[in-house]
Length: 318
Image 1 (tube, one colour):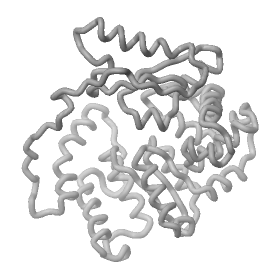
Image 2 (spheres, one colour):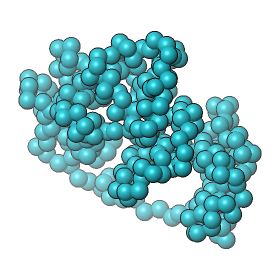
Image 3 (cartoon, helix red, strand yellow):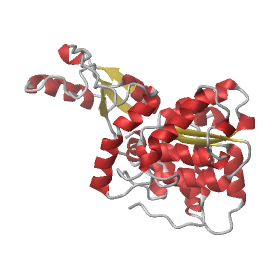
């Protein structure tokens, strides 16, 4: 929403939104936002109370004339009720209590995977034997975490990454961060092409600082893509054909390059000494110029990076 708001603002249309999650708004920094401490799922606070809902909307619309953006204002009233209390429920029985919990969970989720496959008719879990092996592959990583050497878990080194992607295909909420001894730009591109966020590829020599590794792990678990700058530089050095990226201004290309390296908006601000609002405006212009409209089928940030890294390929938005 923030990027779309910036595009509308750049074209003279003031925007305002209503938030229920303060942290998300503080990170995205949209132009104008009214934050309401209401139970989740109740953006206007009180169902069947038109007068109260009109007060909420009036407070939001009152922010439209503000020019000192970004603006984040708290609504004057907080609603806390039983809906905010955590629900207590009995955990379902273990599929097999003798197994490690992670392996047992993979087995327990198999019916959900089958329902999704029946509904969509597609699956990506084919690299190392299909869905029947998912629980075994989870067990491989359990043994590695428990101290078993990588070369003693029954997989070749190249198959470790394939195992991770099989698990991710079966359970899309799993984040994958690949640490490699050597640079493989083709694998990094395949990783991006087949995953819509929550993936990363870094060279081990660049994560000697624990803080860098922790930051990368945090970002992929939050849904971002993190690609090693060396890979970005190598792919860009291979440009031989015209690219849609050439429509971007020099500054927009700098912003997109940092996006390709996995930098968040705040990271781009620090690198280029720009304000959050300026970075958000540049990103909005990038999406607009690359014809990347909102869609449930892909993540615009990831698609923009793919266009940047593979400039000779045609792209579509459908």
